[in-house]
Amino acid sequence: LTDASLEREKTLAMVKPDGVLGNYTDEIKRVILESGFNIFKEKISQLDEEQTATFYAEHYSKSFFSSLIKYMTRSESSGEAMEDSVVSVDEKGGGGKGGLVSIGPVLVMVLEKENAVADWRALIGPTDARKAKNTHPHSIRAMCGLDSEKNCVHGSDSLQSAQREISFFFNEMSSG
Ligand code: RTP
Ligand code: MG
Image (cartoon, rainbow, N blue to C red; front, side, top):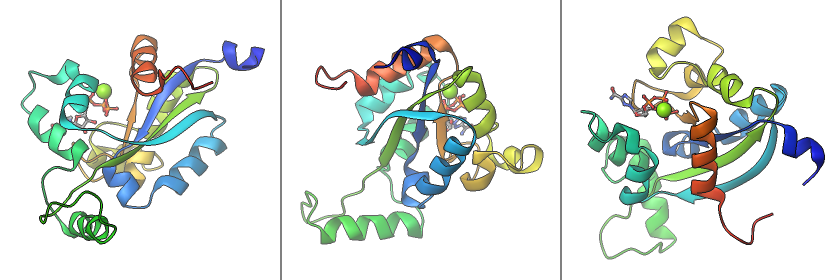
């Protein structure tokens, strides 16, 4: 760690399964770097239902909670992109039990810059991607989101959330 990286604010960014499977990762990372963030850490991960429920625990009582779990774990088939990803996993023999195996890969990144939490939230735009397309046409959710659920990316909503979410994904003893 350099002194500079210790001082700069950090936030957790995630490209959700629709963003990864829609091949938006490179474009999103280009926008991140052009906007002055440093990508301090990154990894591809895969959330199961329990991990998603923990990550989004604040929404446990919301009407959209079970739908959110399915979206983030990609545990329910819907649409052609989904079926394509299922087929490719099966062809690679990814733990198939004779049936379809669905996966919801996510790319998680620790972004750092001055005012990282608020600036990343501003860059991704409003939760509802349909609204983003109308009112924030240059936002990331306008670029790759679909609606109020399938919105392509996540951003920590406070410094406290950022600390919790960064340790949720990056607390391994071996990581630097
Ligand atoms: P995120 O936490 O993923 O960055 O999104 P956010 O702060 O903009 O929105 P939040 O209220 O925290 O909601 C978390 C995620 O739940 C899904 N959602 N679905 N169907 C719905 O009305 C609805 N509302 C929210 C979205 O995937 C949202 O990002
Ligand atoms: Mg949120």
